[in-house]
Length: 165
Image (cartoon, rainbow, N blue to C red; front, side, top):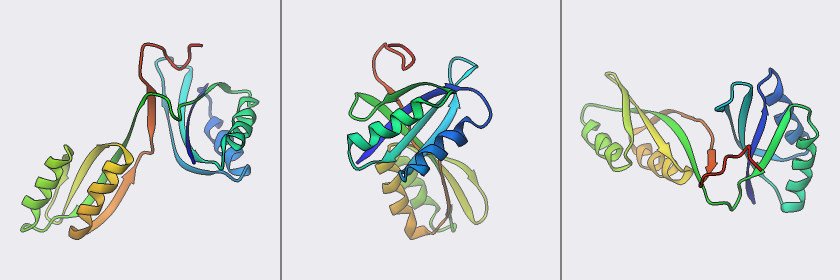
């Protein structure tokens, strides 16, 4: 099963390396990892999606992560009422005869064309993983040259912040 963890850490060099190293040493596959600044300049939030056999295995990883000195808090977002998104930039071949069809696909998915040249278009899409996968499937027929994805970021609904508790 896939589990989504929000890990609040001190904003210091090497923290992301320590966390990803610990998870990989435990033989867990990191499906997605995204890190960025928070509302507090000395704190970074890392969103990790890991594949674990069961909750016991996940608990072992969380316990090990909790022991790292730079880890402030770990929140298991799996199953909680949350918003999660991913950003994708997709470079697709765009022959002049295909551009209108590609633009229609972009509009259907509420994506944006962020660059155009003689041979390609770059499309920006924000959404859930299945939405991005569905658009990529449709764009395959035109020839995808390159895809860049950020990985999942997630936040719980409601008034309470992750650092509170």
